[in-house]
Image 1 (cartoon, rainbow, N blue to C red):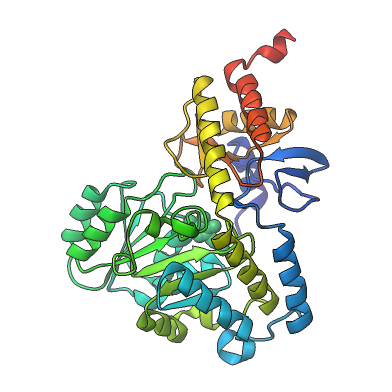
Image 2: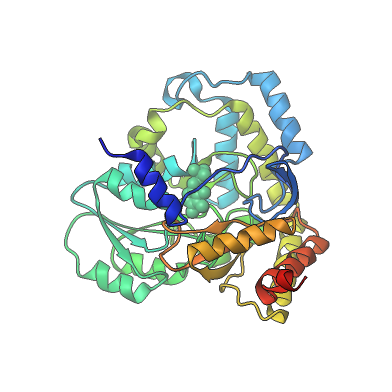
Length: 391
Ligand SMILES: *Cc1c(COP(=O)(O)O)cnc(C)c1O
């Protein structure tokens, strides 16, 4: 048996130990965390819907109508009219014939790739893809081929040089630790030229990018024939929980028959589906949330440039500040917290070695004054790091 205590101590020594913060308030710009009132820049609640009164009341009245538990898996007796209506509305939203709900994005990625690929097949993935897409390779048994981040030339060389079997190219739409957008038009062309599937995980693009928030595929001017498999999550911009896969009838029916993470798990509560339906209406109707968010992003980028801070190249609400070493990223994060601001340090293995960073995320729940407070704190911590010594 391995010595767990020793391994944990080693992690601590390498500044890779992770600890949870305990929050005592709902999602919002200001949060009560570990007993402190902090201004939060670390949530994926990009549109400020996680604590929206209409979403809350849909959950409450959903519970009145449906109770709490779904009671069983979708294929047994857990598939309610609420789930069914949500699937139809989501399919409509992203302009595809069908959508299928999964309990989480993690399970959706495993489910799709496990249903479509096996040992004889190859899965091509961007190096910076989310862990759940990488884990799907192991789970499916397909051979994983990773290409350099956003480098379609590298991908082409790897796709072309390989033999028979199914080929699937999978990419994040918006990269979760970097905030940049995948080169979807070039990826779609590469997939088409090589008779490969293209799957986009749009966890961070849905709701935020594209017309009415339809996501990264729409933002890039592509459609369902360019990207036949779309996965998106509901726990980020939608402010609720869960995920869905959208595509044509054959894809969705195949998943219903074969995706083990769909079949062998209890359906999410129907009341949650009602809450997501309310949130979907807000996502579509309240364009001002996206407009406000993009204005805040611009304000933040301008302010950071004035301070001489170099942000990573991103036009999305994920605005990371590269630090380098884990210990230093932790120190900067702690100093921000002393100033009442919550920005987490992202460290390996979540990000590559030597690229620890502060992952700043913005939300429509923020106000301009919040962005200005963030900039002031960043100035004190990054531009005048010794000011506290001088008093
Ligand atoms: C958050 C995330 C997931 C996982 O979704 P959950 O619903 O939280 O399990 C998958 N892919 C990406 C890119 C994500 O950011």
